[in-house]
Length: 454
Ligand code: FAD
Image (cartoon, rainbow, N blue to C red):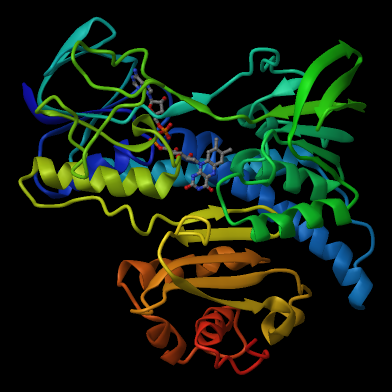
């Protein structure tokens, strides 16, 4: 049989593309060498957020004792936490399988290799398809002098499998994955050290917001080394780490290291003659997810950064629709980035550092927001950046507890090219965190009510 579409990789890119192609009546084959749901469901977004949520509650319980809701000692049972996390993942995986079956998607487990522009080999068997979508994702990167060993130096997958909280944890790499897990384990009680080679945490994102996260880590007793790198790790029972921090050498001792310094493409089985990639091996695609080979498409992490599940899924939908003859295209303007750090951080559209034309910026601090104070926090802010003339919103950044839930409105504002007036005009329910979005738009227009409009 010749399939209409064969998809390699069943992460949030591949399985979503399969469902959409199935909805559109295509004969679909989905090939996965590991588990349905890919990195996101099995080793990434979902298990990490389960752990992060519990770590947040653990921190909050301590706070409850401070404000008069005495709960007493809370015992951590990390083995049970791990089991619960697995149940969540398992339930979601079954949901995906149900949907794939319902849309008639044929699924096979095995390692796929591209053999020709429309032939895929899986475990010695050849499958033929008129169109192929490559959705093979990415894997963690090592450093030349620092490699994951699964015992002392861990990647995020091994970190999520720990059955006890390390007393002292060093995170190498202050990007999203390292910081999210680092903050979570700090909330569970680890002494946290973070080493980042650039001069800010979350390099490339709003510096002021990243400073809020840095200060929060330090306030809880952690240490952040910026413009720094790990020179050497000596393993003899404990881990002795030499850090070059802005020219000075500092030595620390830790129990575990989380190495989180970037990703590399899973391209070893899809290297096919003529397929265009960039220098790092990521597949080059256009806004319709087409590669330079007519019937081959690529989606998700294998097309390079930003490495985000919702981006992979959206690209999957676009690819499935384009294959089905629709005029779909991926819109790069409003890819939301959400970091489940402590506090959380979101960034949609452009940051102030990225815009070259004249802009106006509005800001509203959570210090002045009723909902934030009733939830027990005051750190952070919402920042809105708009074109100076048209007042069209170009970017929204927010840092603070629970701001991940502002993502939808922020993305909608940018995707729909709303103006500051639009966002400020909409009545936002009181008391909610989303009022900070409205007030920051009003602040840009110098008419916010609950702060002085300097
Ligand atoms: P993947 O999810 O990597 O799936 C690719 C699949 O292809 C894999 O299952 C793999 O086994 C399979 N495969 C590869 N080669 C072959 C082959 N030859 N044959 C058959 N199958 C093959 N993103 C967010 O948006 N939000 C988050 O909160 C978030 N948190 C994260 C936390 C962690 C700890 C990590 C590691 C990542 C996180 N991400 C998050 C990123 C997100 O997981 C990825 O961007 C997303 O999974 C990419 O989806 P994908 O479909 O491109 O690839």
